[in-house]
Length: 415
Ligand code: COA
Image (cartoon, rainbow, N blue to C red):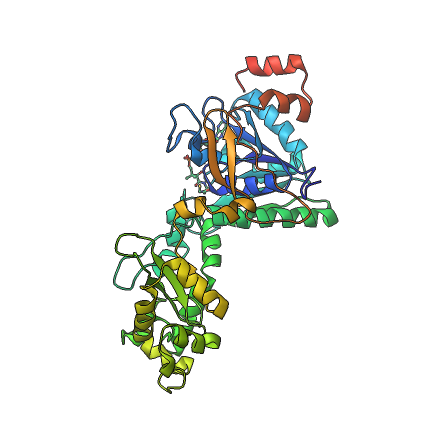
């Protein structure tokens, strides 16, 4: 048995944020029914196409373990089918532009009328307020949620990150909201509306930066490199390069081969508890008891010198050798792994975090499996559905339509 077995999801999501949410729910055992426009489907099916005629990796990697039904929800018969889906499902997940669902005739009020137990979960770019009507994509959310202003180097422009914190991050937030609402429904018998705005999700992930914003009132942020460099702080939390976010200073340092390999780097943290080990490893035993270096406070203005010395050592080792030497000494380090290295890492395959999936149009491709492991609810990743692959099956077995009904639905142009 799977954790969410028996839960039916009406998946009205597209692009990335919503689909990541419903994919997680599918991996936990929910029956996810993806509703797509006939002949078109989720726009990502045909975006960034690498194999002509096949669903793109963008689509396949975000829509595993789902079933696809095509339905024109602006057609009268299509609306009737959608009504039946609303009455049958436990959760409706959508990430249309603000107002699209109302225009379609499926406002929250209408959905409640049709099914008072329905949990209606939405991703929007912004919550209620001046920007609530805006369409939003990943990078807009990263910028409006505070991430971009605090990412990058002090002397450069704001930067967005490769981690899709706006889309996939908000999908995760929404998934948590949905299972929480399902849990509450056990007690109340009622559905509810769940909203995860992308700006809020990004800000939640930037919590420590709002912490630093407030700490500025009490003086400079001493763990930031700019403090040791004598650069004054402004009135907003600055970009901190690769400085460690916490009170344990860290940097990205070059390793052997950095001249030709763009990923020959390691992250290195000078955790206070293991400072003496750091001194021994880098050949600076004299720093152990020198009052200029021995305490975290004494080290803060000297971080450039200290990380310079550590880097002189790391440049003599590969990033893996740094890991092998430092780990037994409890010095926290991490190699900068490329996507190529990650895709070839056997341990990630063993845990199911990287999976090989077979697809009738594409052949075999790699995907990221379920990143959350439940000991009592196994995940088996199955390929994404072709457009409308399960239309008839869903109409008959989930919604109870007869063969004749299906024929007349077809004739109406709804599917
Ligand atoms: N049958 C008929 N019509 C359908 C349909 C179906 N099965 N599925 C969708 N549509 C219609 C919608 O009703 C809408 O029509 P309308 O504008 O005439 O009312 C239309 O398709 C397009 O929807 P929309 O959401 O506006 O798509 P878009 O491509 O213009 O915008 C986003 C894409 C992502 C910018 C927008 O959906 C959005 O801001 N979503 C919320 C935030 C979000 O999730 N962003 C991240 C995406 S990764």
